Image (cartoon, rainbow, N blue to C red; front, side, top):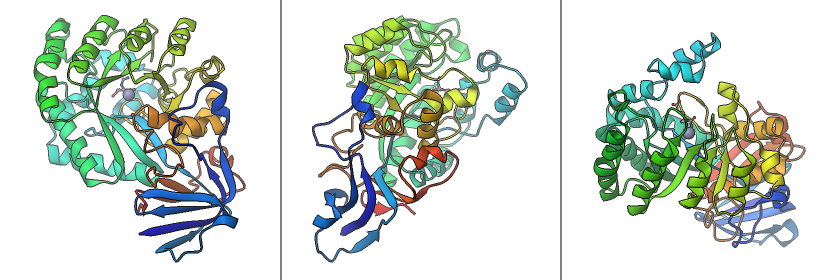
Length: 412
Ligand SMILES: N=CN[C@@H](CCC(=O)O)C(=O)O
Ligand SMILES: [Zn+2]
């Protein structure tokens, strides 16, 4: 099937296949063509260019994009979309003055979600999660990473990963699965950390590897959760099963976790609301992608990742949602891009690079996703009529997406 998009006001993020991520001052550049066409053959980008060079063919579908911008779909490299129930009561508790830490110390937080998940059947968990996946696809996300981490038991973690696998089989959106057994210590292991880590390493990981349920491994490296040494044990064990690390780190405290992640060649380090100059120096000499999650900062009122300091130091930066029931009950990448511009002072060009090509890199898929490149997946957002692409983050609360194509097909 051939789809031809014509008269595109501006086609954004056109890249050579060799570009896998952009860093530092390169992030300010968003290559584009004004008055462009885009040709799609089945699920692949076949050609693009100036309208004057548009092929004269009878395409199966022709979309006139006069006054509209076209860009690659969002690559959301950090989510917890598979969960049971919600944590609305904790939201109200926080409004009434409790902190995230205080709620967690009372048995709320991650353990609250784990209790609900273990009481929920696999089928019900799938049904709840698919609604969120469908919503983010309509909001322009074409590739997503989904973590486990609300099971914290062998059965619960496997159940979550099976649901992620089933979602990836049933939906066209590209899904990467991350095993996050090391999300929190279950209460029965509160005083026996090594016992729980042994369970992860000796019981969970071999089963997950045997069923091929995960691409990556994660841990919550944070005071009160997994220490740097414990996180290193998890990363080493994952590596033995071929799982590369993507680590939650520096959300509340800088505890030298980033150095450990870089030492273990982590693909990404995520959160980074608190970043030291030493952390930045370490990241400069690495292939590890820093990932910021501004809607988490917004929702639980914690600092935003210091994007300007990091980009000015020459680092790359990716943006993701962190969609989860506790700290970010939203998977809307449009809001993430707008918030990065408004609160982190990223330019629209930087934010779009961070949410597309750099997000793809943080999922290991920049060879197929994240830019308008011949041979890559035909995953594109077509906007409504806009004055320019700056209108997308400027009108931060508006829905400016007219339609989304994933694998060359319109998302209904
Ligand atoms: N910080 C760790 N994990 C999640 C939140 C988990 C939760 O509160 O359910 C996050 O990325 O924000
Ligand atoms: Zn997270």
